[in-house]
Picture 1: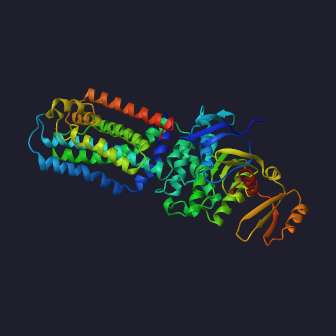
Picture 2: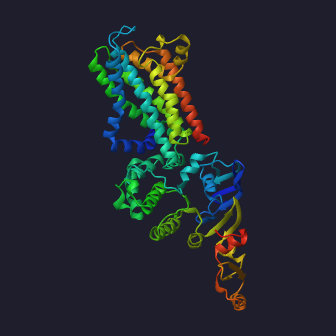
Picture 3: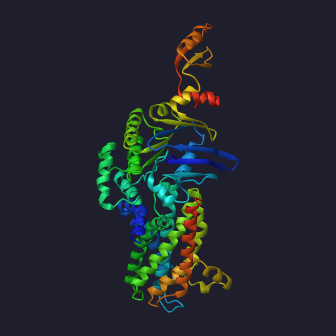
Length: 283
Length: 249
């Protein structure tokens, strides 16, 4: 069965730079998909093409089976997008921003008030509804932005670095909300450069580096390509060496053999290790 | 049609909400320059009758109204879009909503029309108090609305294409400012050398000025000016639509 979001060989160039290089993806209905990579890897460019904001130089994007550039209005009706930079109108209130988005998304006037109350209650925004956006903290702006993006109850929610710049409390609240939205049936496509975020939230992960999709699969499958246990040793100069093993016994045996004064840690393999093995560098 | 108007309102809502919150400061700033024009050109520089057979006040007030419709229509729209594109990233939200592109173009022009009408309606009222030669009428108001709309469409184009505030200021200095003084607003283009008159005749403010002045002085509809202005409005609309549709901003 075709995925709810399908990108087929999408390419985006900016002059000589190939920002996204022949990326193909198929996102399943109802999953949380993480698009993981370092800054500048092409994550935002990819999400802009998937959400109709930027046309690929080649390749196609389909949402629910329809080409997004052939039927962009239909595609836009079914998606919500939370951009990396806060995209609210700063000089009007949260309530006015929500109404602005609701009107643009074709929600009948008589439903706007009810939906605003429902969504702001979920997000705990009630006390901030009549404040100017520019007077809110980053966490509250992000919450307001989410309400605006989901006021039309989209089936698919794209989130570009949703927790970038947020404090721990706001980040935890947002993770909780993402899980809640997903539990209610919303498919979520999120970009992140935080390993912990991908580990905590995502069902499947695509790893992108220098515009290319270098790995795609469930977290467990991706980790299995490296091993199950990592032995990390750090020498006096701070240089780190990592070796991977299929079982703890082998990992322990290897670590016991290190007797040159390096500090040694045995830990479970993470997505960071997968990225390191694939690209030779850390995120 | 109802769906289109609803989309236009949705796009314009944020700009109108901001305007409502800042109505007093906006109104004051909208009135300063037209009143200064009126004082400087209406009283300070000229007196007596013009070649057109009306007093200079009756001649210059419609010209100042045309200037106000252009500057308010252009600047408020262009600045708003520039800020929403470059600093607030909120222009993408409009594109991402499922509204028609034509609704975005018209919706973004609404603030220019409203700002233009705020300044020009008060100017017209002052003009009617100053001289009985000016006639306030529905066609006059409609022509002012149309002029504001045309220049707001030009403002949408500028807001989409320029990439910084200094660039927008440069466009204003090179395009808007020369039209302000040269396009038959404060003096007739007939008094200029023939070649200059022909160039100025082709510019939109010349026709805004003629259209508004003709109604204001009770001379009826200037068909040619309406036609030329309509061509400009259609061209600006088509270019705005193309820029957004093909993401050329």
